[in-house]
Length: 180
Image (cartoon, rainbow, N blue to C red; front, side, top):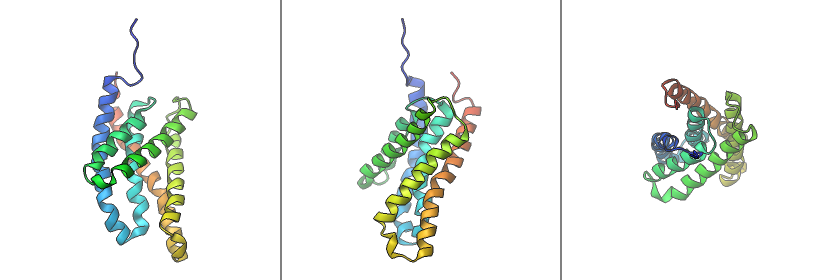
């Protein structure tokens, strides 16, 4: 009797390929962090929001348990090559974002793959990021309009990147990447 694993070799290879591609983007986002925080810091939500891509693309393409988490970890390792000092930040972000995406998928028992489900996970991630960044960046000390813009972009950043990820994932699925 042959038992198939949850993550087949094919699925792991697809996760790795998506992880490498999105990890490069994550590395670039990491490099942009300091200039963005030093300049138009309220745009940081767009930079940080790009880190939702690995899980969104993997789940849209493969529609299987654990693919978001595995792909996020691969992406974090690749991004770490761009800035080794931030390795723990990249891995922590990967585990958090991947866990949220897997958690939302698990709530639907990995049976519902509508866009709404992806946007729920993006909104949860965006809200979490906004709250954490509010306290870490001491936004309360800034003028009100800056606080509002910063928080809105922090929530909308992951949502916008989720739309991009769904487009990429759908294109990969149509191209046959998910065929068995």
